[in-house]
Length: 301
Ligand SMILES: NC(=O)c1ccc[n+]([C@@H]2O[C@H](COP(=O)([O-])OP(=O)(O)OC[C@H]3O[C@@H](n4cnc5c(N)ncnc54)[C@H](OP(=O)(O)O)[C@@H]3O)[C@@H](O)[C@H]2O)c1
View 1: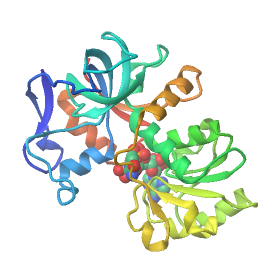
View 2 (view 1 turned 90 degrees about the horizontal axis):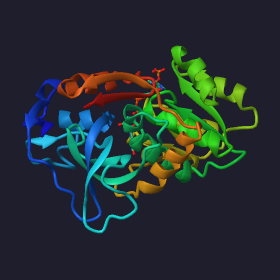
View 3 (view 1 turned 60 degrees about the vertical axis):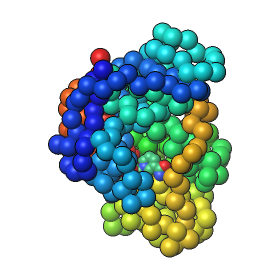
View 4 (view 1 turned 30 degrees about the vertical axis):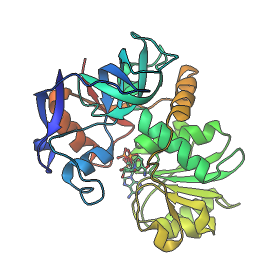
């Protein structure tokens, strides 16, 4: 079967479409015939070699952590799903015609494979950071980087929890954020003042999704570093705020929550761009612009 591999760290051009053996699911896993794979920043950071000190790879390595497809093989002990079912979820080397998933949920019929392929990481990350920041009904939460993949999910999940959401994105995404249910504002100088004007009673929690160096501003707005969580700014702990990484987290509850909300028409992640499997490098480069509305997706079939 065809899959993307890279034999050395580098730019998008190191990704190659090659022929590999069909991957086999271990106990508790399943194999899907991939219809589409979602593209995440972590994947081009790994490809570039940013993580080679902390997580060295055995090269050649595959790429991709999210996919939607049809179940082709069940690992030992897997129940509640059958060969032929449409699912989406997280796994390994998902930029491929076949991939092993380690967590999954049923794909709602009303959601395309391409859209569902973009769901897993934003859903898991979104549910996790909202829980870590204690975002519940009636709380006011600020989301910095609200119109990308993770941000769009965080906004919708927070709105669903009954929170008041202030979303930060560029000028072109203000109407989009309002449509997701957030009060929009722009990034750049004057952020603290703009948010104070929008939330005169204060901000209970602030989530830094963009990693754009605003953790001190977010602490000024919450008045408490303990109420600030970043997923992309590793200087946050220097200011007393947290970084959430999610390594080892059980993704299944978030995937199921997302499937339920999407089936009810209360969750969607727009597809900003689609690329064929052979152009996986271009898909990662598009994601790496940092200005994608919703998701970049690799369509496999
Ligand atoms: N730790 C974890 O568990 C975890 C999990 C998933 C992702 N991440 C990381 O989180 C980051 C975001 O991921 P993503 O997939 O959501 O990225 P993305 O889709 O590229 O989203 C980028 C978002 O940031 C906004 N943005 C760009 N420049 C900004 C600025 N200066 N200030 C505020 N917002 C700005 C963009 O808005 P405009 O387009 O309007 O400019 C867009 O809304 C990545 O670094 C990724 O590696 C971490």
